[in-house]
Length: 111
Length: 111
Image (cartoon, rainbow over all chains, first blue to last red; front, side):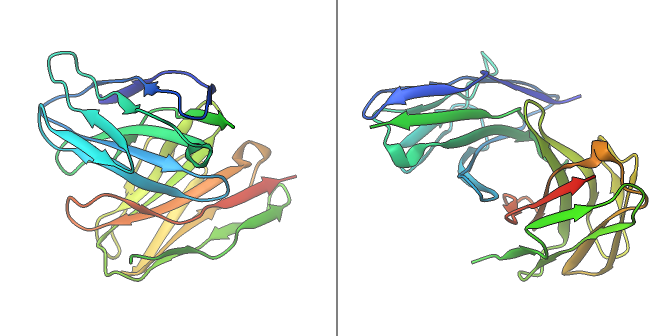
C-alpha cells in the first residue's frame, strides 16, 4: 500500500539556519502530497501541498517540490525562526483515499 | 474558517470503561476521520466516514467503533478501554479532495 517515509528527528537548529526535512513516498498512481505542521498543544494544520509532478508548494517561507523521478517531497526553509518549532508531517493521498502520514519530525529552533 | 471541535481536551478513564470521544465540524463536510497519534508512530487511521451512517475501517480499528448519525458529528467509541489505548486522538474532516481540517485533539489516559 501507499506509504511515506520522513527523516527521523528531533532536529535542532539555531535561528536563521537552513532547514531541510526529507520525505519520500511509495504510491500507486499519481498521489497528491502534503506537509502538515503541529504546534505544541494543537491539532495538525496544512502547511503546503502539491498535486502533480514538478509542482512547488509554498507557505510561510516553507517550500517543497513534488519530484516524481525521486518520489520525494522534501520540506525546506531558508531561515528558520523560534516560532517554527513544531512537529512536521509529510502525507499523501491517492484519489479519494484517506491521507497516509509519515511518522513526523520534531523541529526545535533555538535563539 | 472551518472549525472541528473535539469535546474533551483531556480525559482519564479506567480499564474496562466504555468511552465516547465526540467530534463536531461546522462546514458541512461529508468526510470525517479518526486518527490516533503516538510518539514514534505518527498518525494512524482508526475509522473514517464518507457519509452519514457510513463507516469504513482504517488501519487499526480493533477495539474501536464509530457512529455517524448526523453529518456534522462523528463519534469514536472504545467499547472496553484498555491501557494500550492511552493516546492522543485526532478528529479531522474534509470535503471532496480538499485538505483535512483537524481538531485540537483529545489526550486519553486509561489507568
